[in-house]
Image 1 (tube, rainbow, N blue to C red):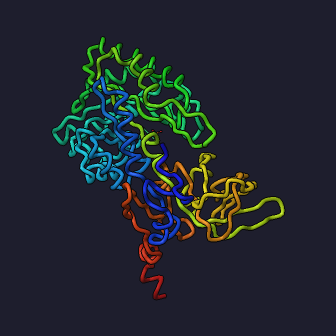
Image 2: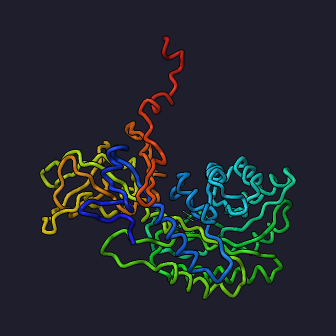
Image 3: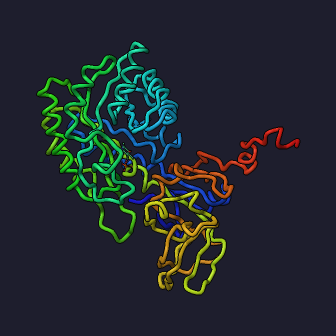
Amino acid sequence: MSPFSYRDGVLHAEGVDLRAITREVGTPFYCYARAALTERYKAFNEAFAGVPHLLCFAMKTNSNQAVLTTLARLGAGMDVVSGGEIMRARAAGVPGERIVFSGVGKTRAEMALALRENILCFNVESEPELEALSGIASAMGVTARISVRVNPDVDALTHAKISTGTYANKFGVPISEAPRVYARAAALPGIEVTGVDMHIGSQIVELAPIEAACTRLADLARQLIAAGHRLTHIDVGGGLGVRYRADDADPPGPQAYAETILRHLGALGLKLIFEHGRLIAANAGILVSEVLYVKKGAAKTFVIVDAAMNDLVRPTLYEAWHEIVPVIAPAPDALHSHVDVVGPVCESGDYLAQNRALPPLKAGDLIGVLSAGAYGAVQAGTYNTRPLVPEVMVDGTRWATIRARPPVTALIDADNVPSWLAQD
Ligand SMILES: *Cc1c(COP(=O)(O)O)cnc(C)c1O
């Protein structure tokens, strides 16, 4: 069930009229539904209810403190990819024992921070990283629990920019090398081998690649156990896809996913760790924007809105499709025409949708860009001196701003003009 639906002809987020939020916050803004985050988190956990597991929310998808707090209070762990994300997770009340740390370029300072927070596991992505971690942990007199992130060389059958599990990608250690790297890890001071890890990509809408990768991961786990490694968990990463287009089929849900995972990994008796982000957050969020102008060009009609690629980069970065709906429901017999929905930024790549059939829109109308709760606000920037887009959370009939729109003066004041330049 989408948390965004029409009530009396007006798009609501749960029980809140999006026009009411617009009046106070202004456009554009992101809006997240607490109930949808909760429901998706719980649905995933229910699918694995029978086995020890931990869902570590991939917080790079949406790291607003209110979103993290929502999930932390339900018992979620966090998959972090930077020291900053460790600090955000801790600030949201997530204990170190529910944090896993992924990423190919962990700095020494980030490793030290993670060790001070006594995190559950480092997902180590290379031998040089392993050596650095061993050195830091030894110097601090502590032990780093690790998994080696293995690259199973499986094509996730998704967009090239979000496929991570083949040998052409920078991620992980080739699975063929893994036994040797594990042997090395076990011999290093300050390192304790506790798991195996993979993450093959994002927006995966078929179970076949997951199944292929799980087969290889299970073989590796058995081989490592036979070699004497004391594994306690197996981390299968995230990547389960969601539906973006209303007329697409639903991708496999948590139940079908769980059935596949447990068939291959259930018998190992290890705790399962997951790193899903998009699955939890994508369809819990919407981006609301106002139409500024409708411009009829020689070849196309452009609906120019006040949200741009700096607010939501997915359409131009990943060729992503986001459903766009008017906030006021169109008449049932409204004629649709094909338009490009574009922002004000001075780039031809600045669009939210191209050649999209939409009902009539005019200046002042509000639109909602759906499925914007993951990889939306977190990827926003201030290009063209546009302040960071604000975020709002609804909960039933109440709502709150969870990140305000900063004033433009904050952007200007962040810069420093050297005195020698101002005075010359
Ligand atoms: C991005 C990422 C995830 C989350 O991917 P989703 O498709 O959002 O579930 C999980 N693990 C790692 C290591 C990642 O880089």
